[in-house]
Length: 192
Image 1 (cartoon, rainbow, N blue to C red):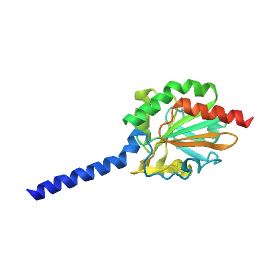
Image 2 (tube, rainbow, N blue to C red):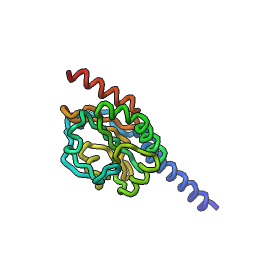
Image 3 (cartoon, rainbow, N blue to C red):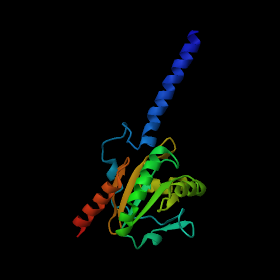
């Protein structure tokens, strides 16, 4: 009986440890173990890399950076863990609702994770996402912008770039579209 009790206890302990590790991935809340040394600013100034990605919502099903976004004044990358999960759906649908505001200001937006194109297409179609979802195979773009990884998937992170100055802001978690636009508007004021 004690062996069975010990096995159940050990299983529960491991389950709760595993859930504690996964919680930041699915809730969009930063992990408590992150350092406080300015992680969010380590990519400041990096420009768009020259890369091509499979992407939803584009006629060619490909997005080539920076060429395809050369007309945009700002670019927003939403790195998210997985398609069709609750936190990711909430975050990307919030951006969908605000997308016209971004589009009106010539701000390019893309969701990014490692899922295959078919998964992205199903997710984008189900939720009518008007911006592309990029297939970041091997986390090339995530690594370039130093997006942390948790249990093999992206930590939820938003990266904002200015066409003139490169990365101006990087934030883990789930900043609202309003917060993202505020960062862009503040940058426009200080850049003039």
